[in-house]
Image 1: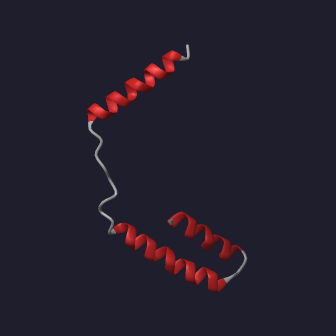
Image 2: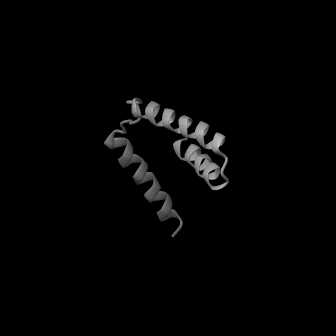
Length: 65
């Protein structure tokens, strides 16, 4: 989301659309601040689940040979 808004800022700067630059820059700063306070970005995958998934993927790849 932040990179999409930054692309809009860059587009506005290139074409000298100062109102677009100002509004999208404010939106980008707000998105950055909101993202900073989002502490629930991570998740935990148990090692057993990773091993099970990788083993299934390896078996699938071996079936193609």
